[in-house]
Image (cartoon, rainbow, N blue to C red; front, top):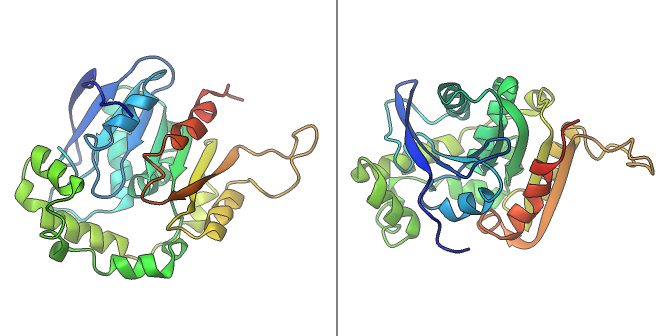
Length: 272
């Protein structure tokens, strides 16, 4: 991807004690809210936002403690981050939007569709489990080491360098690692909640993802897909879609050019 242009506009929304940073690119179509993965931010993901903004308005958000959004004295929880997204849409006077979330941001997008269904037109979940059991055991074991001890080894990484350049309090990077580690080590299971999702949903995974393929299929089925033959008349085609992108990992899929290619036809499809 080419270097992204500056956003058309940016600002902060005051929600639940946060000054939630957002930036807007593109115009036209249904607005798309882009929610980053853990330790990422709108600056790191700007090339993806720029690609998606070619034909639509894209609103990139820095979630609590990430990027330009300063942390506050509350733990990281998917449910509260989802409330933040819904409150942002209300402040921007956007009744309904499409949501695209990756990994951590995908969990937030899914919870937004569960908790605030009236706000979500279409939902795209990239490499997202619906329970902590969806991760491979070795990934869950790695989460146990996610904390401030990694701060110093991560200093050369783009993740840290970007955080240090734009965060209101760069010295709090170890705190972010602690909070993210605490979140990722919490057990959760949204099996029952997933059935409440009403928005048409596209699931995108890598074929070498950190999430087990059978878990991805289970989520697809819980959303109504993969239950029967689609039929010559397409009567068995559900509102859920599943894309498995070949030759990619969890850590590459979001930034791969294949991701927008899979996502854009879904977003552009006529409603109904």
